[in-house]
Image (tube, rainbow, N blue to C red; front, side, top):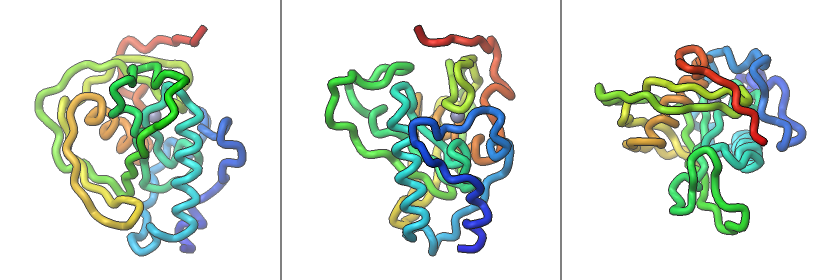
Length: 190
Ligand SMILES: [Zn+2]
């Protein structure tokens, strides 16, 4: 627990404004593994809840890594909305959509396999508003992680989810998409 307390520097107070911007130093750090026996503790549950609230506050957001809300921990979550038939990339779900599928939780994730086949895909980041660029990503990815119950699992993905695995695991080692994107431009929403 001591380790985690040290990792938690500035807990987010207001979820709506809690996604840290590019000046947040934690975004550039290697984040710490969560000791497996601590995954189900109230401390981690609270962080997961904060992450979920912060992600839900951003309509266009599809995933969030713990360092983005200032926790230097190896955790990311993926919004369940990306699996909804009404989901539109870059926009999210229609505002009248009531039932949003559960977030997927990845604790201490490790990429096991990346396809050799890659493609340039458009990308943005909740911590770097409002920059977008194209990033060269593997089309498929396989990841292993622990879920919120401390159970280890393996998940394979292609397309958007594979891209998310790559973007989010980079966050956990202090890398941002702008470090290797091309055609970076600012697109402020109207
Ligand atoms: Zn990001």
